[in-house]
Image 1 (cartoon, rainbow, N blue to C red):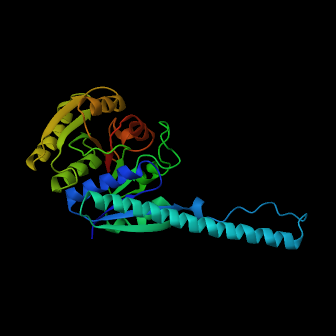
Image 2: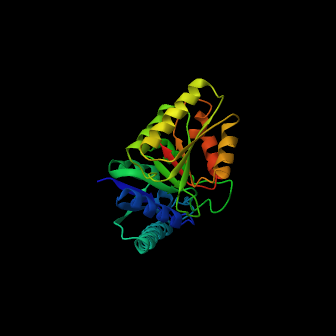
Image 3: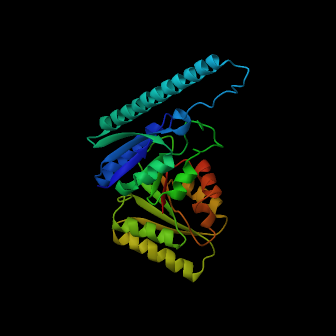
Length: 285
């Protein structure tokens, strides 16, 4: 069964991840898997101290025993904390809607968990920042770029403040990735029912205009209210301004491209867009 797989931690973005998951479940009539991953830093054995020959054998053994017990206590606390995060998240979601939520507590690496759950996942929801980043404007979740790069499912990146999405901006360049995004939308997606602005950045050549119009028409045929935009300039600056000017509630991107937009879809420039645009992102593979 296809599920929405939402990952939560102890950050201030967890509530928004839950709220976006409830919205997505309503759009798709689909159950949710709410997942918390206990990172290796939480349950890995402590690094041993320099237990040189200056310590008697009995003292060394006693110290190692204490370290082992401390590691066990940390692992227990990490599991209890993870279970509390999941319980709070599932309670929040069930209070918002009559919804099917399954909770999962996993050990290891977030990226591994995304891959292991991929077969049952329709798309992934993550917070824009993790616990370590807090509210720092210059920091994004350390796993975010890796998750976007490796996921074979669409990734919804939640911002801190949830707002029910009504209008999205699709950054379109005619690449296979953005064409697949259009195909997914025409086949039925979480975006169904929202107004759409479709934006290409580049010279207004007949070829680019034709691709843009073709994509817009395909979306109109399945009921989207679409407005076309073709702008010249730096893609990052143009898209950032368009999000604000058009009052977009979500920015939709393809993961890779073949034009000047290519660097936007994966890597450092995408991360810069996420820092500057205060809206959620939906990134199609």
